[in-house]
Figure (cartoon, rainbow, N blue to C red):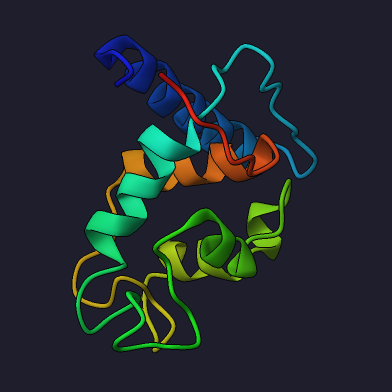
Length: 128
């Protein structure tokens, strides 16, 4: 698990990116100082605890989109392009049928982790 300081840095970077994008149409934040997001310990748990639940995206409810493994998750991810990734677009929607999860949105921290992971290339990292 990453320390609270890492999450504070990630949240701060996300907030900075939002502020900068509001002031500039072409801002591309420099992500080289952001620690690599670990798929196994940071991204997969978000999907398992919020999406791959019984009757939802575990294979029993939505068989066309199962979100319980790297291979399955990557079917809705475009590495390097969060806004081109169907899964990311669904978790950041504020309304409509495609908004996921439908009852309660993911936390800002969880959405930020997924966005940064995608921007970093959506790698299947196994961290210790």
